Image 1 (spheres, rainbow, N blue to C red):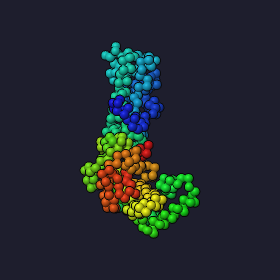
Image 2: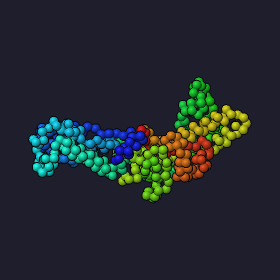
Image 3: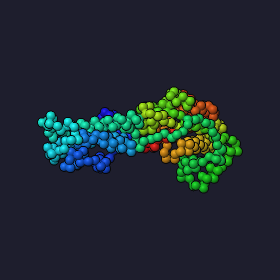
Image 4: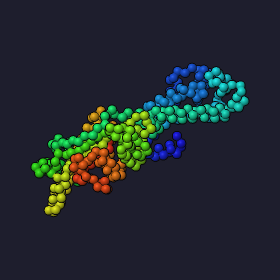
Length: 376
């Protein structure tokens, strides 16, 4: 990987380095001859020449454990450090032509330093390249190897009654109704009143939604969505502000398709009509209460749909991430149109304008990423 690519990656995400090389090599129970004799047993850099496959095993182990980048096995390869050793005493049998008579004249400490360092860099580069080809880009990954949940892609429409909805009353109070300083008893009575009135007047019909899982892969900051019926046919793409390739979603270069969840939920149009009627009559306070409750219902139904997708995927809520267009993780509102089209939002009475805004306004759409790396 080129240096500027590495620096770019550092700006975009956390990069996990590998760990100690020496302890891993000593745990491999190699023989003294592999080091060139007992006098060289602390110079593991010589294994770059005698046992390069063992160095690759160590690099591989760290990559599989979640490292994004590996350091070269060249800790002792400086000419200054090599002056501590008498290479005239080395057992050359494990090193092929490296120490043979034909090259002995040029193998001073500086030449050995260069050759060991060069070989160490080659082994590290080859290890990363081989692993990246197999796993779809090791360096960009943020944790242990991610395997997409085994979910068959689907799309379904659903609804729930307001009685079955897990309303987040804390958020209703503090965010939707801006009543953070209000007495809790007063708030609870007010919430019960507006929920009752909404039921009696059908202002909030059963919240409706659509959820789906599609095959996908990422390239840079683009997420490519594929057809449920034809997994190799690209049907849409989403744009993120930074790269999501092999951090949130598997790369287009990986051997397998990733999966991505989508959802849209709405409190329905009746709450919006009621809010307009209150506004028209000059009852701004009631307008804010019904509008705030409808927004809360849409958000909390979205949380329920997300939980359902996690259950289907067999993962907990801490292992996936739900992001909605218009927020920092995916700020481009045009992504709402992509989600709307993928899910056929019109099927639950939702429309969308050219600016990516929904009607009813108490509607929210989201993308679900199942990789734990998206939570970082």
